[in-house]
Image 1: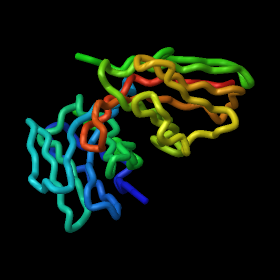
Image 2 (image 1 turned 45 degrees about the vertical axis):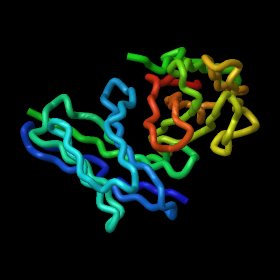
Image 3 (image 1 turned 120 degrees about the vertical axis):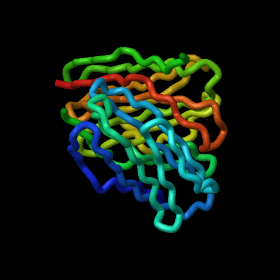
Image 4 (image 1 turned 180 degrees about the vertical axis):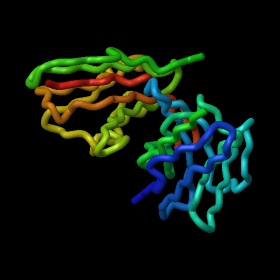
Length: 114
Length: 115
């Protein structure tokens, strides 16, 4: 069975601070995919990034970066110089094999204040 | 940008009524998912289809929920009869990939309230 754990329920930071959202996953499959989605207050789910189990390269996209470590089964997400617009709930998710279906973590609510 | 379209965006109805939610996947996407989001359970998969055939509906209460894809451009999720515990946001998502490597693109959701 697959499981995704986001231990941080809620994080509050002041604008311009860096913040890291943690994600730990469990799966017995050797091929799997990890995702991050953002859910802003308006409610939609926005895809941010995909990473496959064979690619442990970290990725940076603007102020966003992701750190994938198979040794610790973690796929953490860092926002540098956070902004108020980053306030949202962030979900980490896992899919395996040919199933495609996503197993979501419980989400981390990020509040960025001025 | 291509988008997944869900209707209605909001639905309020009384217990016992039939509810139908519709989803238009992104053109060309062959895999469609229904998820439900609640405070207690978070985001959970209800059912999904590939090439219009149901692959997995184990997350769906079978006695009152049904999901179909009448054609490649329309997926429906029905609840009959509805109950207050069905109140949630229902998301449809689609992907064009045969396996897990492509992201799912989500609609804006249907916010359902059963009184």
